[in-house]
Image (cartoon, rainbow, N blue to C red; front, side):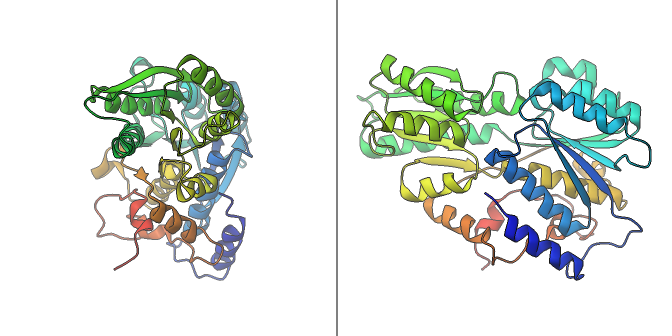
Length: 374
């Protein structure tokens, strides 16, 4: 969702001194290596959220896009670390996407730049190489990762609930499903898939015919959906790993006369504007979102660390947080209202321990934003 007007409003408030942050001689600077495309809705939303957090907390944010090229994530990291000492940022934030973490950490460590990783956890075969934060790589301060399994579980369960309501799933009726995942290697994709697989496997009358990988791409998912439907004409639902793949699948099968939300149920992940509208309109059956905020929460952690409040003291260095919520039509409408240009800017200081000494644990859920204050 494009937040340009809200970003402008927020920056004006910062300039006017309306945003309360702790005093510091110079604003801490952060470079974020964004693994996505600059025009990709999810990573655009993630960047917008980070910019809101940076403006709110008085931090300088620079974003570099790898354009879905894992080698570019490494080369961009190298470019930053090779800057002259007066041009290097105070901190970096990386997404650890497509198993680039070891190479990125090596470059960052050699340059002496403190960093936080977000979105993707360390995979088992990477652990011997990278260890834990502040061990092999002393400048790797920590990580903040959405509990990705939740997205798979929530959306799969929502599909089954709707299928039961329609009589498509019962003791004598098998519910036929196919799934279009993101990629094969990212930790978040793997864990999201596992949540979905576990949820479907727990029900004996759900038949998941096939899981394919759409690489987060709308066009690829559209082609896959057509092939899957030809192969399994009895399917009643398509589970997808992100919104672009859902939109591609919906369009492809709609062109064959299958109405989304009526003939075929769809579920997906990502709190995009179009996704919210599709939930409200009933074309999407289930949408889980909130994880686009992981980078913004990483900035909160860096802000606290910069101000002498080390998150590791009582949170540990590897934070796995419940960030996902399942959006109903009412929650989708609420979310869109909160993102409107005339909505009050979010005060990220409210989530900070440095701003709130009485806070002992971070609350990085999106649910509190969606529910009206009593």
